[in-house]
Length: 117
Image (cartoon, rainbow, N blue to C red; front, side, top):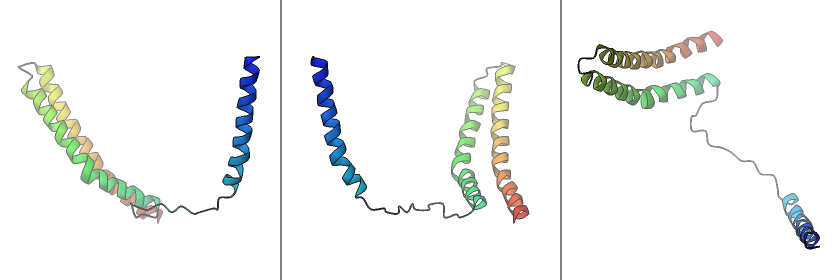
């Protein structure tokens, strides 16, 4: 008997909520939301160039610097172990190669943009 009362009360609350909420939702006017264009780009190539420019200027150089320091510490603390020394050299090499790829990516997008347009 107690369960039936709880279900009835929940149903009444739900019905009252529906009756009072639906007119307010239906009475809203349609508004246009305008999002700001922080990238200031209109085409896909322009967006890609903006993202790559930010990557080349703000993200990649600090990461390369950190990875070079990590590689230098690996070499410094190798203590004569050729494998640890080699791992430090490879860390620095991969950081430089990664940065070169990021820099070349801007040129590749320029080539693709000139072919497409």
